[in-house]
Image (tube, rainbow, N blue to C red; front, side):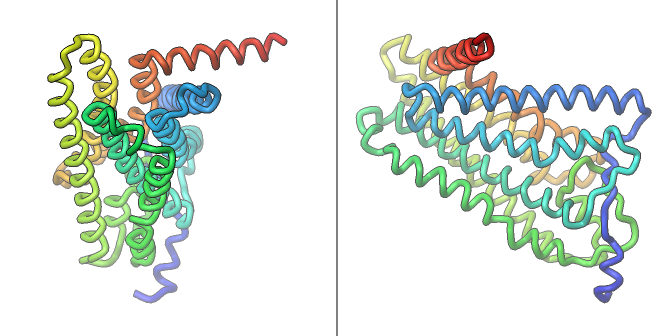
Length: 314
């Protein structure tokens, strides 16, 4: 296939969640509300960490970066999805589709690495408390955060570039609400795209490696917590680590179903629901999970809200 034939695919059609107009309005309202809650909750955490000097510790700096990541993670997909609920022509340009594809996977990969660092931080704080201040310094925290962003955005850059160079012909309809790897590979005219296998292998490697590291870290943490003589100390450690494990379970449970286990037999509707859970559902739950189970964060959020009320009233 020559370049002129491949160039005929200038845009894709994202079917999203097809249905009657009333259903589209209902879905728009629900997703819009979830999106606003996600932005508000994660921005509140960022502001609390920024303004409260007591939270200028590695644990909360990581949490603020994680909240910043979640804001962009939902923003790379949800606004376009909301527009498609209201428009009859649900098109996305070729370049727009692959830009979304790149940011969606890069931010998702970065989230995997952030969850690893947060697990490492909790391991040091609970298993090696005396050495924690000397190991998890501000400099090390900054280096780890920078590596998360750098590696996360570098990992899939080359595979996604090569996928964008595949020949696309015939139907340009994607039965999804975003540009994901499986629907795009299904539209390729190349019968055996090696890059697709490389992409899948990379996804499996990153997901399995990071989840094993996280589970290993929390296994050591759990063993250390059970040896704490004080019930109050055990409860505080369980509270902090429990919130992290809830996020890990929600995120990894869904992405492993999508990108590790064989899902070719599942319907596109199942794919869309699973993707909606980890790309939209998890980010909105994170602020509630982290803030409601943490006294310091609740206190800081209270000061932020009170400060905003004073500013508005003055």
